Length: 171
Figure 1 (cartoon, rainbow, N blue to C red):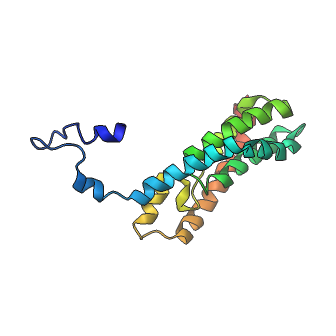
Figure 2 (cartoon, rainbow, N blue to C red):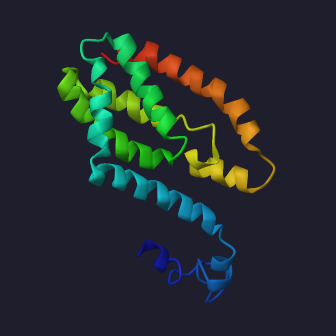
């Protein structure tokens, strides 16, 4: 519905010109739009199929674990998933999963949910991770090798920073 408004709202540049017309619409990178939509569909499929419950059961080994173990596991878990889905879709998927898991392993939900949500934003390795990755990759000037070479150190530093900061400043 919001996209339809783009065809109605005047651009303010020329008389009678709208923010979007059919010629501009045809030039859009529809593969990017479909890729982001697919990520949300995958997240919804995980939830409705019960796969989130299975994933949550797989993480129950965190029961009784110290905070310095829980935070990096949550970060890495959401960080791996976010490389194959958009960061927003991953957050949509992991937050309910971590909320349920926090109840089962008896830790404060914020510990898992914050580390999982921030971990999902560390999507630097593949084009599917975030819209900015897709846009950069679609130009043809950036390869997957470039993304991995630059993104892996960023992801490692991000997880390490969260592992130190969340248990200390987060309390």
